[in-house]
Length: 455
Image 1 (cartoon, helix red, strand yellow):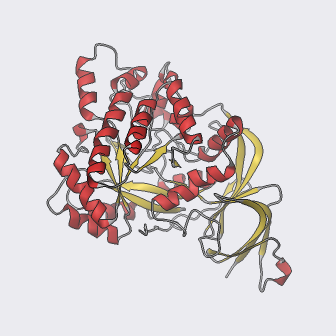
Image 2: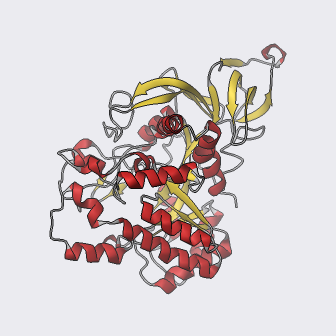
């Protein structure tokens, strides 16, 4: 088997950092030690000099929508293109979504997994559940056997059939998941508040109006609603892409009442505000939930630093500039932005500016935390003997500017265009194979593996 020896790097774990060497054989890490002598290794070995670099476990983007067919079109990044941009960002595993066809969760899962075969990095899946059926527990059992560890529920999008309207039916789904050991993740926006807001609305429907049409109160009320059900059943929940201070305050109230909530946010809710929605290119920054205020940014940043947020993911859903600018009506603009590639440098730059976030904490937010939350640990999310050899060589001091020339999404733009960031991925290794190095993508289409959740 091919062997790689990574020498003289600074290994970063969630609880420690130390200068050690890593020996990889085949797809696994087989040894970690202070000084591994290449000459004493039997057989040929490729030595990688990591002096001056940080060595991280491969990142996990726990919330992506690659090659998503939606609203009569398809997102910009194919599975092959998405794998490439992920590799440039140090992401070796993503957790994408299987939509519910409302006939069979198993057939929904199998269809999505088949679609994702061209992936060049590893992937797991969340299973959407968009309606209650009498045999829903059996359907959930079926997909759990296939490695599904989490379902996705919406509290909005009644108009497109994603909303489970009746509380007792939603509670039955929650109960079945608890009994089966499946985690419930939820997109929290109260559909009734959004409907009532739009009915009373007398203004325009430009991108700048989107945060008012889908207010932070809708997020907070939805969190309260699902949190109450979770409390009744004595179970935990995973809240995706928390976007607001108001939502955060409801999370705190529920936690104070004993509800276990795992919270995810995204770089755009941490670092971008609603002023981006103004002007001719405002549509480029439209996603759901919408961008909020600077005050919301600061509240979420503070919560991140205080350990109230467990996962940072991207909700990568990339459309081209042309697709995004086809409409100026916030109700019909394709929602979503790219982000997987920018994840690590954005968070690392924030860590430097805040002075309160270590690289170990970043590893926990972007790798170990998601791996544990979604049943991928210790196969993924850690540098230890026996784990998959997913490794990132990261230069912590290299400054560069994010723009259409330096990122690889087929969308052709970044929501962070013009930002100067500090820290750059120089090499990405997936299961012992270099898939990005020297600015060249070396991934192989179809080489990505489906990773089952283990709970």
